[in-house]
Length: 327
Image (cartoon, rainbow, N blue to C red; front, top):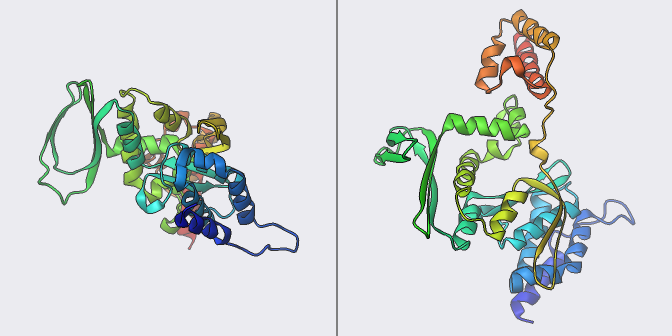
């Protein structure tokens, strides 16, 4: 055993060690450490000598960012990151494990997506960039030809572009305006919808905290639908932005086994509102002279066919406006 591995194991023993809150109670950190020791061979099957340092990083991450998440869900997300051989250090931007309620959620960064695509062997070039005002002179959506002027660097971001070239010569370009990206975010993240009525320091969604990175991920996902799917990329499609309830690694061959995946941030109450509920909402908005239909349009909500969740969001906007006017 090398000195490096011994050192990493010693760090695992002491990383984030906490005192049980009550006599006889084992802290979640200790539970996670014990689970990692029990599954050390499985992690080594996919990470080799990097397994020990990966486990130390996970324990440190748990104590800094994942307090309150169940150790089981943290370990399941860690198995995903290990199987994809993506580091979980936040500053690197390849993969993240975040907390959603009491569940750990695995999120791949756009850099991780690019790495997996290049690893597949079928992708020769791939990149995605934010586009600022004045940088696109013309875009033909049929031929996918874009004329750029990259000298304009000081404008606001108006969209995002991705380019991919396969080893067989096929190439593709995709452009999405910022408005299109915003519609996507509101469609697929319930937390981001709720953030629209939260103060800046209260916002919780990854979209609110890392908008550009999530936008680049979105457009990369779209363009990768035209790439040959490797095993790693198929795993990525299944587990990205999911709470992994149950996952395992075969310690003999290092293969990943995912048994239970839940897309917690995508779950919606799709029950349609009634006409009476919409009329009540309009009446509430009219009493304070608030154009609630305009607010709905800004949030890309179809006012006449909105769901219960969307109704609740608009009602919250009205309630906050009432509070402001009463002060």
